Image 1 (cartoon, helix red, strand yellow):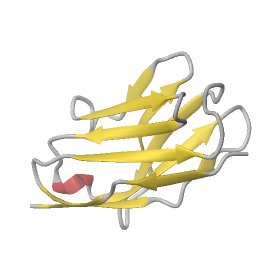
Image 2 (cartoon, helix red, strand yellow):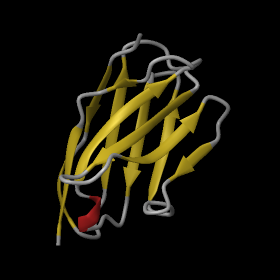
Image 3 (cartoon, one colour):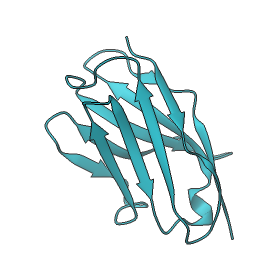
Image 4 (cartoon, rainbow, N blue to C red):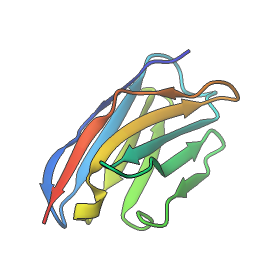
Length: 115
């Protein structure tokens, strides 16, 4: 089991940047997949980015080239650097961990991008 706590959300103007962080309660070195989901009001949850233990990363087409996920197994954190933000990026962002069993999620952090 792992607890996840997100931070770094807020209000930013379109074109701006934010960096989200997710702190895990235990070592993430052996956790297969860490990543970020987001959910906007009235929309389905969307997988934004993932980071595998082997080093591979994956991004949703909507954020590719603008967002970067990074995984720090020393400090047990996962970050999401978000650049060139757009109003459509407005959502609650959730950190998650998946390791061949139940998925774990944080409480979420709100990101609001104003036009």
